[in-house]
Amino acid sequence: METLSALDALFLRVENQALHMHIASVGIYEGPMPERDAIVAATAGKLPQVPRYRQKVRFVPLELGQPVWVDDPDFGLDYHMRFTAVPPPGGEEELCTLAGRVFGQQLDRARPLWEMWVVDGLAEGRWAVIGKVHHCVVDGVAGIDLMSMLHDTAPDAAPTPAEPWEARRGPGTARLLANALGEGVMDVGQVGRDLVQAARRPTRAVTDLLRIGRELNSIAHEAPPTSLNGPVGRARRWMLVRGNLDEAKTIREFFGTTINDVVLAAITNGLRDLLIARGEDVTTRVVRTLVPVSVRREHQGALDNRVSCLFPELPIGVEDPVKRLLDIREQMDARKNAHEAEGGESIMAMGELTPSALLSFGEHSVAALPQHLVQTITTNVPGPRKTLYLAGRRLLETFPFVPLGPRIRVSIAIESYERALNYGITGDYDSAPDIGVLARGIEQGLADLKRESKPPSGRSAR
Image 1 (tube, rainbow, N blue to C red):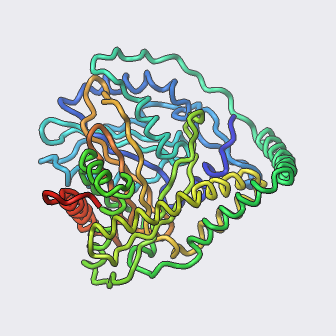
Image 2 (image 1 turned 180 degrees about the vertical axis):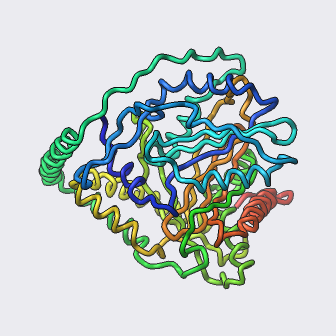
Image 3 (image 1 turned 60 degrees about the vertical axis):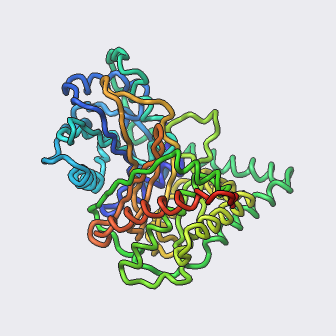
């Protein structure tokens, strides 16, 4: 039995029928598709590396403590691996439609929180895998590690034989309550120890508090309302956008930015086009986005969540693509220099010291608040660095999925793999039927920056 962290539990508690807190990806593989038994065997042999795939969540009665991970005595791989196909012609539209439907379904909380949909029927003899895992299991960076675990790094790798496995007996109600009581006592003791440490190191304590204050102050005022906020239903639309990592690096080097700045600038153009197409005035407007930032240390290899957040304001009111990029660079540099992500990490750490029942009440309260402070979510995660194979077939492309937030109708995820830098756009099915405009706007934003990063002869970089 292992207790979930405060952040992992938060991803469970904010989830409801309309807000599904799983992360996912769509991988496209070279054909032909292997036999079903070969794909199942390849996955079964990897399960010992991912214990969470055979564990489920148990909740403490009356939410007196954090939920815990326990082995699922009814685990069956055939429940989590589903085989399906897209209709002809098996193009991107058919694949995206299927992915949107899969992403709009909540994971079964009575079982381990993951699914793997194997999709046949793609054009050119290719096939795909739609993988889903709950956010309480992994963050984006750990999700990439998980993908690498479940794949091979050579096409001729011998399948790992499946090992016998027997579920450990789960705790009874009395043990769950006793464990929660012990947690509460430890929480109080830890708070006391931390207060003593803070008193011994007043300068660091004050610095941490200032960082937290700066982070909270950065989102204290509401951004101008747009149609990006509002009620969200349970169904999803999803689209993919292809990008080139080498081109992004060229833009980065020419303008002295980061890859993430380039990505945000392209997204800014897409959001600008989307709102203009909806008839909204973007003059002098910004779109505030939540950007998760990994605070995982090299020694923290566990598949859990270690993230903080930044809240840049995307300058959709600026027409010039270069000016937008430089504005974003200036914002992100200022936030990094102010160590705002560390402030967010401190907030997360404070959550670990809050008694579980009080934390649960706070989590439900936050989830119920109207969301006007943030208009969208953008997350950029470095993907696998090596070419991956599943059942002997090469992974050609991968596209990410990130869930929507409370009253946030559009989210964008970005993932690199080999020489690609690909985007996955998620929209609420009813209120964001036009995410294709956003997709084309991102493509155009990248093309504009690529064009501007090729100076005429004799002209130097900016």
